[in-house]
Amino acid sequence: MVFASLFFVCFFFVVWMMVYSSVTTIRRKNIVLLVFSMIFYAWGGAQYLIILVGMTFVAWSCARKIEWYRDRTLRIVLFISACVILIGVLCIFKYTGFFLEGFRAVSGVPEEIPVIVLPIGISFYTFQLLSYVVDVYRGEVEAQKNFWVLLLYAGLFHQCVAGPIVRYSTVSAELEHRRVRMGEVAEGAWRFSSGLAKKAILANGCALVADTFLPFDSAALGSVPVSAIWIGIIGYTLQIYLDFSAYSDMAIGMGLMAGFHYQENFDHPYIAGSVQEFWRRWHISLSSFFRDYVYIPLGGSRNGQIRTIRNLFIVWALTGLWHGASWNFVVWGLYFFCFLVMERLWKRWGFSLPPVIRNIYTLLIVAFGWVLFRFTDFSDIAVVAKGMFGLNGNGWSDLETKIFFQNHCFLLLFSALCSTPFVTLLREQFRYVGKVWEGRFGRVVYLVGALVPVVLIVLSVMALVGNSYNPFLYFQF
Image (tube, rainbow, N blue to C red; front, side, top):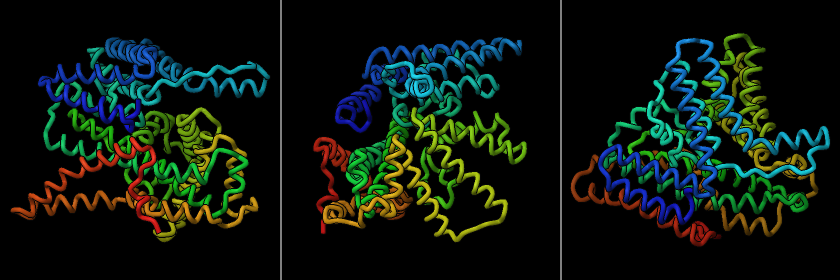
């Protein structure tokens, strides 16, 4: 089950909100939220729910004992044991095939590599439980005494699909003491509906552009014209941001409707003026996790240039591997590592570029990075890299490319606009006008603001029903 599906939007989400809003006490709300979260995780198979419950039990029991015991050696043993078990389970499900393929390339065995289905959300709740155990060990949070409360934290269905990675310290107080305010419910409805529209209309539309001009068929990829490849890269660049940020928007919105305040996960990364700034704005919860639990414990930038580069190398190799069990993801992570190191050296030497050039440079670096992210076959990556400059003998354009671009240019333009702060600033200005103007005009502004989420959800459902409906296709040359 995913958020951008008809079943979730029209049934699961509606039933959850009806039941959740019908109970009054936090204890009952937590029971409702826990039950619906467990149903969400068990949707693809009850066995995956057992994994979540088991990993949460390991984190809960080890954290409590870490807090109880005063013997340093025993605390370290418990801490390491919890981390090894949690990371080990993640590796078994996510990286067994990857490691076996590498071993087979060297030794020739095994002949067959088992296909292991990845449980939904395992990467996210593993990192959440790891951060919880580490924070208890450091003494930064108190161990949760109630197992079911910790299971609720680990299993909140809001953020299991694509984040944000919610730290226990962020929601520890709200797990047992929170208020659901109508103003925040309204704001949550806006965030959820805008995220759903981002995914169902814009991201899925951009995905069509990317799939058309960046096919996974190697033979077809070599004949794609230069302009089509660049359009496909632009489409995929927009798709992947709108996709990830949409799920985060929906998670934050549902959290607000339930009384939780999750941290922002994306901050318009495509307006960044450097790769370093891009990663301060992209998947903020993941970047901060690796910073606080890997980079800083390794020494950060405190022990000289060589060790700093070593620490960055480890962090970005792990960042790439976290995104997927394939060598292209590792290369993708190390690709950004190279530019981050280069930018550090530029800054040290006093090298600078005008703001517009910095933004263009960053967009080009990031866009080609998404090519590495998209294709698991390095030969396909090479074909795209050559095709970007016409080195495949692929020509500049053709009639099909021109017609397709004409039919989708407004979609790409609006998607690009939604990747900037423009919509956020427009909404803030709209709300300001509603507060300043009194009387009938002010009421009209508030009414329009209340209707926008409804319109967005209706359009999103139409897009999901049709699976190809896109209002922007009606604006054609």
